Image (cartoon, rainbow, N blue to C red; front, side, top):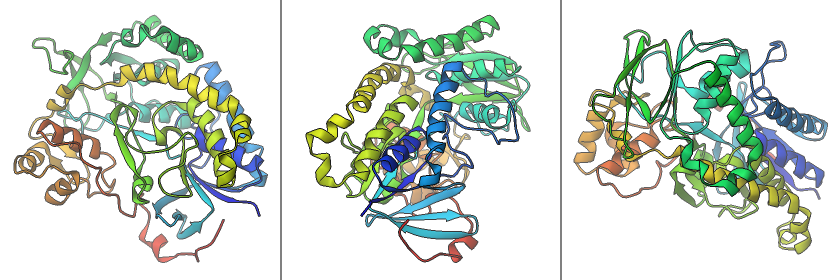
Length: 466
């Protein structure tokens, strides 16, 4: 009898896993919150919105190839769009919400391809309207061809700020400044690794060329330290920091703008994995708390797999290759995975994952955030946006000895709000470490991992197999 699979997420890893599992005869169900496949990296606009996502031609070709392959198997799988997975238990029972009802699914295997979300370092004024994630500004372009503002300052770590700045320019927008924390030179000496991802390097250089040709002021080792404006961003103050992340005196530069787009890396959407009791590890540059997996995505909980950035930030190409291997493994009998011919059949995908992972290892140097940056917020700066918990309140709790995330949550309410800690957990943990807290486990995730209407909970369909 064919094995049943549920895949959570329809990004590169999820689509690739679905294609591989279906090819092996599995009964596949894919659930995703978006209306169209692609995830964040390959986000699609509504069909009625004809436009350009302003990406490089090679990136668009990869996107069209993978989404096209996924769409060709849609008549052989069940694809549930606009559906949230909000709870997962060790028994393998997955709870989902769609429209006005909820449902519990049980399958032979569940693959978590839930991706990552952006993180920011709080600073005075970061809750002012007009401050947003860089990926959010990019999502507006991809999904609606809309610019986030009239004059945008893009800042943060890694390659994403460069890409976003270039795409804003290509869309006809104005970038007032591009402030990057780490110089591209930190990854430049790793030539073998860069060669393994040379296609991505060429794309990155073309994005950078767009920024240079537009004569955008480029500030390296600069970060936003203050936003001016009460009702709306009016300007941002950028300052240079040293290698420890400490602001260098008399280096402040005020830049007029109406939007500040920030990205300080990513953290994995790992609430479902932790809720299911999967053994987790902590790797901040790779996405924070991550499920421990083997080469075929198997976790410590039988029947639950993880793939793509949810298992460690490594980009879309690695996610696609890994999704193929994990999808095949989840569709196979457990004994089959141990056979040499099983591995041989996935040799190309496994080799691609290894080669491209080497490139991503080099890119990790660009995502490092020095601990000194976490000293940017003042006592009045809000750390937990949902519950309006300030740094002063958080510091009082830390000084009193409440150092574990769960304890901080109970004492200050940080993490108790609408997002369930998804926005503030990274900041709370980093600030606790500044106060001498040992590395602690993540806040215990509880259902609901995603916000859903109460009416949906009341209208629950009978549990069943997909």
